[in-house]
Image (cartoon, rainbow, N blue to C red; front, side):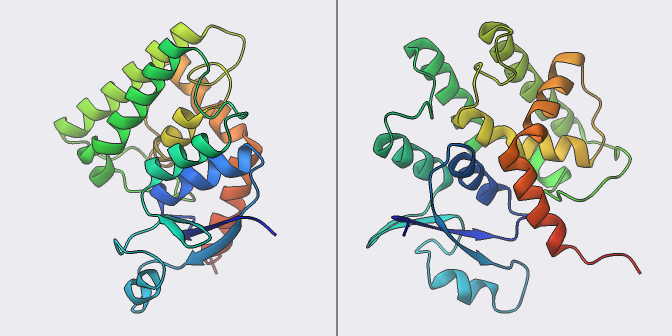
Length: 213
Protein backbone atom coordinates (compact mmCIF):
# COMPACT_ATOMS: atom_id res chain seq x y z
CA UNK A 1 0.00 0.00 0.00
CA UNK A 2 1.25 3.49 -0.86
CA UNK A 3 2.23 5.99 1.81
CA UNK A 4 0.59 8.73 -0.27
CA UNK A 5 -2.97 9.67 -1.10
CA UNK A 6 -3.40 12.45 -3.66
CA UNK A 7 -6.74 14.24 -3.74
CA UNK A 8 -7.38 15.90 -7.09
CA UNK A 9 -10.12 17.60 -9.06
CA UNK A 10 -11.52 16.64 -12.43
CA UNK A 11 -8.66 15.78 -14.78
CA UNK A 12 -10.09 17.69 -17.73
CA UNK A 13 -10.11 21.04 -15.99
CA UNK A 14 -7.95 20.96 -12.84
CA UNK A 15 -4.59 22.43 -13.82
CA UNK A 16 -3.35 22.56 -10.22
CA UNK A 17 -4.13 18.87 -9.74
CA UNK A 18 -2.29 17.91 -12.91
CA UNK A 19 1.04 19.16 -11.57
CA UNK A 20 1.73 16.81 -8.63
CA UNK A 21 -0.17 13.93 -10.27
CA UNK A 22 2.01 14.17 -13.39
CA UNK A 23 5.19 14.42 -11.34
CA UNK A 24 4.37 11.44 -9.14
CA UNK A 25 3.25 9.29 -12.06
CA UNK A 26 6.25 10.18 -14.24
CA UNK A 27 8.75 9.52 -11.45
CA UNK A 28 7.05 6.28 -10.43
CA UNK A 29 6.10 7.40 -6.93
CA UNK A 30 3.18 5.17 -5.89
CA UNK A 31 0.04 6.86 -4.63
CA UNK A 32 -3.64 6.30 -4.10
CA UNK A 33 -5.94 8.74 -5.88
CA UNK A 34 -9.14 10.37 -4.71
CA UNK A 35 -10.87 12.35 -7.46
CA UNK A 36 -13.44 14.97 -6.53
CA UNK A 37 -15.51 16.03 -9.55
CA UNK A 38 -15.55 19.80 -9.91
CA UNK A 39 -18.38 22.20 -10.71
CA UNK A 40 -21.07 20.19 -8.94
CA UNK A 41 -23.42 21.18 -6.14
CA UNK A 42 -21.55 18.97 -3.67
CA UNK A 43 -18.00 19.79 -4.85
CA UNK A 44 -17.15 22.23 -2.04
CA UNK A 45 -18.43 19.87 0.65
CA UNK A 46 -16.53 16.92 -0.81
CA UNK A 47 -13.28 18.88 -1.05
CA UNK A 48 -13.69 20.17 2.51
CA UNK A 49 -13.52 16.60 3.77
CA UNK A 50 -9.88 16.49 2.64
CA UNK A 51 -8.60 20.06 2.32
CA UNK A 52 -8.30 22.78 5.00
CA UNK A 53 -8.10 25.40 2.23
CA UNK A 54 -11.15 24.11 0.39
CA UNK A 55 -9.01 23.53 -2.71
CA UNK A 56 -7.30 20.69 -4.50
CA UNK A 57 -4.79 19.14 -4.85
CA UNK A 58 -4.06 17.75 -1.41
CA UNK A 59 -1.39 15.20 -0.54
CA UNK A 60 -2.03 13.03 2.50
CA UNK A 61 0.88 11.27 4.20
CA UNK A 62 -0.60 9.48 7.19
CA UNK A 63 -2.05 12.25 9.35
CA UNK A 64 -0.06 14.94 7.55
CA UNK A 65 -1.81 17.09 4.95
CA UNK A 66 -0.07 19.21 2.30
CA UNK A 67 -2.58 21.40 0.47
CA UNK A 68 -0.66 23.38 -2.17
CA UNK A 69 0.71 22.03 -5.45
CA UNK A 70 4.18 23.54 -5.15
CA UNK A 71 4.40 22.56 -1.48
CA UNK A 72 3.47 19.00 -2.50
CA UNK A 73 6.24 18.97 -5.09
CA UNK A 74 8.83 20.24 -2.61
CA UNK A 75 7.69 17.76 0.02
CA UNK A 76 8.15 14.93 -2.46
CA UNK A 77 11.58 16.27 -3.42
CA UNK A 78 12.56 16.24 0.28
CA UNK A 79 11.27 12.70 0.77
CA UNK A 80 12.74 11.27 -2.45
CA UNK A 81 16.19 12.80 -2.67
CA UNK A 82 17.37 10.04 -4.98
CA UNK A 83 14.96 11.21 -7.68
CA UNK A 84 15.87 14.19 -9.91
CA UNK A 85 12.67 16.07 -9.08
CA UNK A 86 14.64 19.31 -9.29
CA UNK A 87 17.81 19.61 -11.41
CA UNK A 88 20.98 18.46 -9.64
CA UNK A 89 23.11 21.41 -10.73
CA UNK A 90 22.64 24.26 -8.20
CA UNK A 91 22.36 27.00 -10.83
CA UNK A 92 19.88 25.00 -12.91
CA UNK A 93 17.93 24.11 -9.76
CA UNK A 94 17.65 27.76 -8.76
CA UNK A 95 16.55 28.66 -12.29
CA UNK A 96 13.96 25.86 -12.29
CA UNK A 97 12.59 26.91 -8.91
CA UNK A 98 12.32 30.53 -10.05
CA UNK A 99 10.48 29.52 -13.22
CA UNK A 100 8.10 27.30 -11.26
CA UNK A 101 7.44 29.98 -8.65
CA UNK A 102 6.66 32.55 -11.35
CA UNK A 103 4.11 30.18 -12.88
CA UNK A 104 2.66 29.39 -9.47
CA UNK A 105 2.03 33.01 -8.56
CA UNK A 106 1.47 34.76 -11.89
CA UNK A 107 0.01 34.66 -15.39
CA UNK A 108 -3.51 35.48 -14.21
CA UNK A 109 -4.67 36.81 -17.57
CA UNK A 110 -3.47 33.65 -19.34
CA UNK A 111 -5.38 31.53 -16.81
CA UNK A 112 -8.57 33.59 -17.15
CA UNK A 113 -8.48 33.90 -20.94
CA UNK A 114 -7.47 30.30 -21.69
CA UNK A 115 -9.11 28.16 -19.00
CA UNK A 116 -7.88 24.59 -18.68
CA UNK A 117 -9.82 22.13 -20.85
CA UNK A 118 -7.64 19.23 -21.93
CA UNK A 119 -10.05 17.88 -24.52
CA UNK A 120 -10.91 21.22 -26.10
CA UNK A 121 -9.61 22.04 -29.59
CA UNK A 122 -10.69 25.44 -30.92
CA UNK A 123 -9.33 28.25 -33.06
CA UNK A 124 -7.30 30.87 -31.24
CA UNK A 125 -9.62 33.38 -29.56
CA UNK A 126 -9.09 37.12 -29.57
CA UNK A 127 -6.60 37.67 -26.77
CA UNK A 128 -6.39 40.72 -24.51
CA UNK A 129 -3.02 42.44 -24.30
CA UNK A 130 -2.33 41.06 -20.83
CA UNK A 131 -2.81 37.49 -22.04
CA UNK A 132 -0.56 38.11 -25.04
CA UNK A 133 2.10 39.42 -22.65
CA UNK A 134 1.69 36.35 -20.42
CA UNK A 135 2.09 33.99 -23.38
CA UNK A 136 5.16 35.88 -24.53
CA UNK A 137 6.70 35.64 -21.06
CA UNK A 138 6.02 31.89 -20.83
CA UNK A 139 7.71 31.38 -24.18
CA UNK A 140 10.68 33.46 -23.05
CA UNK A 141 11.02 31.23 -19.97
CA UNK A 142 10.84 28.10 -22.10
CA UNK A 143 13.35 29.34 -24.67
CA UNK A 144 15.85 30.47 -22.03
CA UNK A 145 15.62 27.17 -20.18
CA UNK A 146 15.93 25.12 -23.35
CA UNK A 147 18.94 27.17 -24.49
CA UNK A 148 20.69 26.43 -21.21
CA UNK A 149 19.67 22.78 -21.19
CA UNK A 150 21.12 21.89 -24.58
CA UNK A 151 19.88 19.11 -26.82
CA UNK A 152 20.52 16.00 -24.74
CA UNK A 153 16.89 15.83 -23.59
CA UNK A 154 13.74 17.71 -24.64
CA UNK A 155 12.52 19.25 -21.39
CA UNK A 156 13.10 22.65 -19.83
CA UNK A 157 16.21 21.65 -17.93
CA UNK A 158 17.15 18.59 -19.95
CA UNK A 159 15.52 15.62 -18.23
CA UNK A 160 11.95 15.84 -16.97
CA UNK A 161 11.72 17.74 -13.68
CA UNK A 162 9.27 19.55 -11.42
CA UNK A 163 9.48 22.59 -13.69
CA UNK A 164 7.94 20.56 -16.51
CA UNK A 165 5.16 19.33 -14.24
CA UNK A 166 4.41 22.95 -13.32
CA UNK A 167 4.27 24.09 -16.95
CA UNK A 168 2.44 21.05 -18.34
CA UNK A 169 -1.02 22.66 -17.88
CA UNK A 170 0.20 25.64 -19.90
CA UNK A 171 1.29 23.31 -22.69
CA UNK A 172 -2.21 21.85 -22.56
CA UNK A 173 -3.79 25.29 -22.78
CA UNK A 174 -1.62 26.24 -25.74
CA UNK A 175 -2.74 23.13 -27.62
CA UNK A 176 -6.41 23.54 -26.67
CA UNK A 177 -6.53 27.09 -28.00
CA UNK A 178 -4.16 26.64 -30.97
CA UNK A 179 -1.67 29.24 -29.72
CA UNK A 180 0.94 29.90 -32.37
CA UNK A 181 4.40 28.95 -31.12
CA UNK A 182 7.92 29.04 -32.48
CA UNK A 183 9.88 25.87 -33.21
CA UNK A 184 11.48 25.65 -29.76
CA UNK A 185 8.22 26.09 -27.84
CA UNK A 186 6.24 23.86 -30.18
CA UNK A 187 8.80 21.07 -29.75
CA UNK A 188 8.57 21.47 -25.99
CA UNK A 189 4.77 21.14 -26.04
CA UNK A 190 5.17 17.99 -28.15
CA UNK A 191 7.62 16.57 -25.59
CA UNK A 192 5.21 17.23 -22.72
CA UNK A 193 2.34 15.55 -24.56
CA UNK A 194 4.52 12.54 -25.34
CA UNK A 195 5.16 11.83 -21.65
CA UNK A 196 3.56 8.53 -20.57
CA UNK A 197 2.19 10.28 -17.49
CA UNK A 198 0.63 13.02 -19.62
CA UNK A 199 -0.97 10.43 -21.87
CA UNK A 200 -2.41 8.70 -18.81
CA UNK A 201 -3.79 11.99 -17.49
CA UNK A 202 -5.40 12.76 -20.86
CA UNK A 203 -7.03 9.34 -20.94
CA UNK A 204 -8.62 10.16 -17.61
CA UNK A 205 -9.68 13.59 -18.86
CA UNK A 206 -11.27 12.08 -21.98
CA UNK A 207 -13.27 9.66 -19.82
CA UNK A 208 -14.83 12.63 -18.00
CA UNK A 209 -16.08 14.33 -21.17
CA UNK A 210 -19.39 13.06 -22.59
CA UNK A 211 -19.11 11.75 -26.14
CA UNK A 212 -20.92 13.75 -28.81
CA UNK A 213 -24.22 12.27 -29.92
